[in-house]
Image (cartoon, rainbow, N blue to C red; front, top):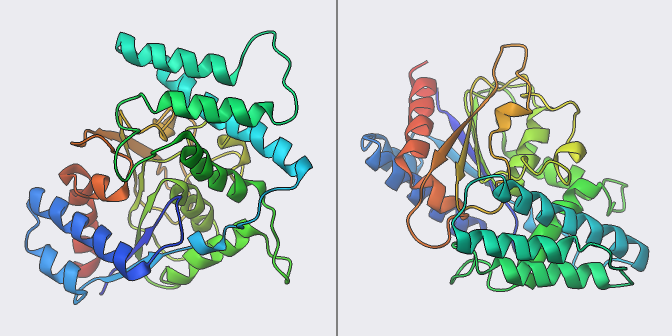
Length: 315
């Protein structure tokens, strides 16, 4: 049986699918070699034994600025996203320099006793974003180079969860994004799904609507741990592993700012087959650790993917 492997990307600009697919596939190949699965790599890279696909949706996000009433709601939710991430890190032991940065950002996001006028929330969010760039791993080439870019990426998470921006047929942005992912899944056979960042939320919801088996669901740098800004808005509630998933591995890096409260098994219930997410920490080299390729090149991430593909092939 030829297994299908579907990559689901996260936030960012519209994708060049062939370019991103090649990057993710090569990173996965590097990780597989490091994990001792060199025999699988050539077949994976040339597509002879694995049907590898890349689900893209970055072009669907609206380019317009939100209306005034929508903007106010959006700014408050963006502030909550950052606050969730900051508070999660303050709950852990940190070096003095890191803790100072986090507390300063928190004071900017949630000042005590100060009135917040029109536009003030957004200014605070941008200021906190710029402050957080002093954290290791947030400012470097290819990463978040400004607080405004950080906010732009977080806005995409908010736009997906807002369930708005319908098209002419009435389908909301979130529905159209899930349709893109669903189109890449095998409707009858097994699909191994590897999702990154916002894509972990999209894939989680899509797999709840999927009927064919998913031998392995891998989430990388997931924002599902954002307790106030993301968890209550994800569907269906209460959160539980999609029924068709047979194994769920969730990987996080300590320096990945998106993964607030990364132990998903604490708040995601198992499915009927008793499958729950299993969270594992990885430590990437370099300054910016959030990109999917950083995770995929890790042998601890790539090894289980190779094993899942091998199991499907030999079934």
